[in-house]
Structures are given as structure tokens and as C-alpha cells.
Image (cartoon, rainbow, N blue to C red; front, side, top):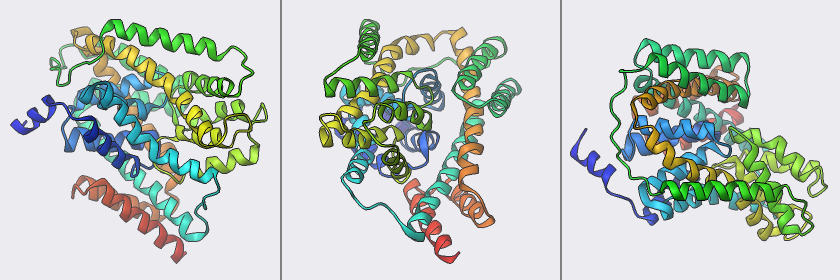
Length: 402
């Protein structure tokens, strides 16, 4: 590793720098949480070398264990480790606000994409997601599954998810990876060198966990006031969903459609708009809070809903990180994490097939666009933004030429 790379890992970044980097990601990261993790890996492991492959995979593995938006938790962790509490806040704001603003604008009546060109643009972005995720799977498999035991763990995790998809199977696959790693991966993993300081003490971790539990208990108390009822509904959704992304949609529908705050047709229209914007799908909450019939509504409702759905995932992450950080330095824990990291590769490979590949690649030209994006990323090492623009243009071209 170069001296500049080592120095890059040791020197903290300013909150403004972190905000700038994550704001760029917030306007270019299409494709859902798995694709977002691919973008993060390219930005922070490959290009900037803020984390090594193992540390990044550990953060991804932790995010799979915890409720909340997985990609946002990984991004917040990177900002936190790089720039402290303000760095974590800057990372969350930069990654979240672009899509939140776009969806609130849609709630106020901003025109959505229509026609063949608009649909082609969205389809092209989905094809870019195929290339991004494929690149992430390839790179992580090379470094995290270099031997037979770990390659086998990844394959078995993939088989489990293919046979029985769902959040419970995802947790089972990761638990299996930890157990198998503890048995099979001792002596195969190097000692972990901490290349980022942990800004959260164990005592503060306990405080964050206590706040998470207290707010969750309060969220189940019936509230008449509009703000508290709205916040409680979204906090419950954020605290009880594992895997993030589209998994939260049934909970959100029950939270806002069942009590009559949002109509079913408006809910579905917002869900369609959420597919057109980059960033975390949890920002769909901003749209729902803005159109909800209970106070405060509008921009105020969007803020309440956005804080409500993201806060539990961030609190439990900050409560867990200091213990995770210390645990992963022990020999037995390193073996277990080697298995978890291998299982994460299997989960990523599963997601690469379904929903990323199956929802985007329908024809030969679709596959050609995805393959070209993959070659640009892996062989030519083109910037992800360039691949996003090229894929979007290809999608529009295919739509107009059909």
C-alpha cells in the first residue's frame, strides 16, 4: 500500500469535505441499497482508501444485522469514523437530502418523468445498477472469499437466499456465516489494524441504545397530537424493518394508508416517483409526510417523517458500533467476521440476480448496456458518474429506438 494511502486513512476529513462527497453520491447513487453499497465501496475503498476491504465489509455485515436503512447506515458509519459525530451527520445529510428534496417537490406537484424518453432514462439507470453491483460482487469476492471455506460459505448463503428469500433468511445466512467462520476460518484472517478511530465510547453506546428503546416504547403509545402521531408511526417503521429498501413499503403503507392519512393512489404514485430519484428509498417518507392529512403537513411533515424513519437506525447503529469495533479485534471474532463477510458476498450475489438483474435486463440490448457498464467500471476504471450518464443515455436511446 502506498504511503499516501496510509496517510489518507489516518488523517480525518472535515465535515464539509464529507458533506461534499456524500452529496455527490446522493445525486448519482441509483439502484437501491445494494447498488449504493457498490458505489460506496468504489468511492471509499478503491478511490479514496478511507477503509480497507475487510473494515468496509464489517460495516456492511453490521448493517445487515440491524434494523434500518442498510446503505444509509454504512454511509453514516463511514462519515462517523472519518469525521466524528459531525462527519456522520454530514454523510447522512449529503446522501439523504437530494432525494428527499426531489420527493417533496413531487409532493407539491412537480412534474414526473413521462413518455418513452422518461421511462427509458429510468430503465438505463437500472442497467447501470446491474454493472455497479456486479463490480462490487467481483471485487468483494476476490478479497473476502479467497479460499475454499469462505467461497463455500458465500455459495451456501446464496443458495439459502435463493430457496427462501426474505429478511429472516438474510439474518439466518449471516448467522450461518458467523458460525461457519468460527469453525472453518481460524488462522486464515490477518490481525486487523484499526485505520479509523472510534469516536463513540462504550458508555455513550449504552446511552444511544437506551434512547432507541425509550423512543420505540413511546412510539407505541397512542398519540392524538399530529406531530407525535406522525413521528411515532415512522419511527416504528424505521425500527422494525430489517434489510431496508423495498422491505419497508408494506410497513409504511400500514402506517399511513390504514389510518386514512394518505390515499392508496397517492401512496402508489409516490412510490413510483421514488424509483426515479437517487439515494435511499427511505426518503419516500418525506413525500408521505408532506401529503399526510394530519399536521403539520407540507415541508414540516416531511421533516418529521424523515427524522422519524431514519433516527432509529442511526441510534441503534451508534449504540452498537463501539462494541462491534472492539469485538472484531479478537481472534475468534475475526474468524466469525470472515464467515460473515463471505456470507455478505453471497447476499450481494443473490441481490445481483434478483431484484437487480431480473428487474432491469429483459432483452439482448439491455444485457449489452449492462455488460458495457461493467467493462467501463472494471477494465477501464471509469468514474461511476460517467457510467451513470452513459447508461441513462443508452436507456433513452433504446426506448426511442423501440
